[in-house]
Image (cartoon, rainbow, N blue to C red):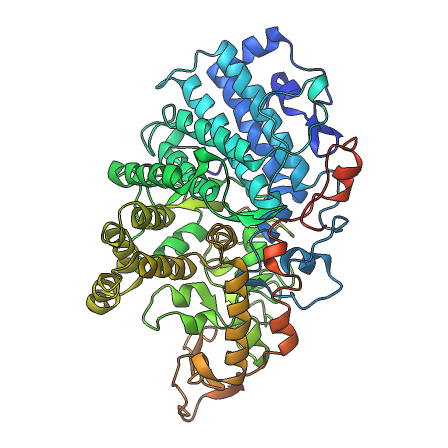
Length: 597
């Protein structure tokens, strides 16, 4: 059963946090007394309720649920907001590197910025209480809860830095003298959460090693180590500073210091045997949409939405025009974002991830309650992420806005790819090769592996060649999961790869250069079930008319204005969102925007 986070009345002083100084979370209730903290944090059941409360701010509409998950991570060299061309749309502004501090989707007191700090304040209270009253030792219930609280705080902070760069660092519960804080260097935050995650990994068990770690909705050691590896690579990587794009100048956050840490953390997870790749890419995503949350498989941790909360499929699923046999949420559900139209053609035709990731059809208007898949001229520039499908669920969603499907925050495939990247940097391409091969083995059928896996990877004999292959593999593995933007930033490839994506789409539109052999017409017919579309002409070189029974569709509708809308401002000058105006106004002058905002 999916986790439903509830707090007893006893825990309300710890859980009810509102925004007095907007953007920095202040307790709106009397701070819990030492007596109540002692009662709560010395009792595992009560302490669990408080730690569960750290996740509650993620579930709010303007938080992760309807803003962060929906908008952070677009637009990249493989993904975009499908309405990016809308020039008077604040939703599009968030994606096309043109957000303003007064953005109507974000400039609210209960926005994700405020909710992240609310979650941090709850974590700070729990961490202090458990350390003071809980005797949180490894192997104990209270020790696990401290590890969980430390990890949840690290999640909030790693996402804050992803979204805004330098932000206020608050690692103790709010006091009068710390009501208003200026921004801190992201280096300070990175070093703290790296230390926190190192401690947490000593406190939480591996997946399925305890009752608490039996599902992907609770923190486990594999995820903690994976998150620490992700943070280490980000901290050592490039990002935008007020003085330009560069790596950190902190001697503790160098590639030489942090890449070995990332490599060891990933190897610990791999060697533990506590998680694994799903046997096929399609099975992974079918199980995800069926809401299988059993730990020990590919998903390491998921944001745990209850059935009446969460908008992952509502936002990203293959589009459904109206209520039909697979969803009852209403009209035009799913399809807010999708892969760039060139991505299908960038995949190796034999890569089994392609057909799962990129979908060129939508579900049309239902007749007698039943819809069928439809492809039109407009489909060419409006693809969908096939990883998210109402038709793969075990239940029919009837809520108007919330499908309740969890958001995968990290999966085992990322462990392998981070291990390959770190091993390549620290030890060379030969050490990286086994990890890359494991990921590609799943992507290709056994008959194709000698060429597509063995020969391909064995030819990567230089560090640069291996790195380039890892960058490509990341795209093919993670398109649609909103992981690409952070990776491009830390590799210092955001601007160049997005410029290349525009060039690729222009070539595709004109059928020149890299896309000269892409057909301009596709043909379709329906399978015996009357709803499943069969398409010919999607693959390069499929230009022959397949004959009677097929309907032709023009496959060239991709405008220059749509291509140009991938980004409006230079992505390298807009790697972060601005701090929203409502938070600046309430900061007593301690907060300001950089980066030309």
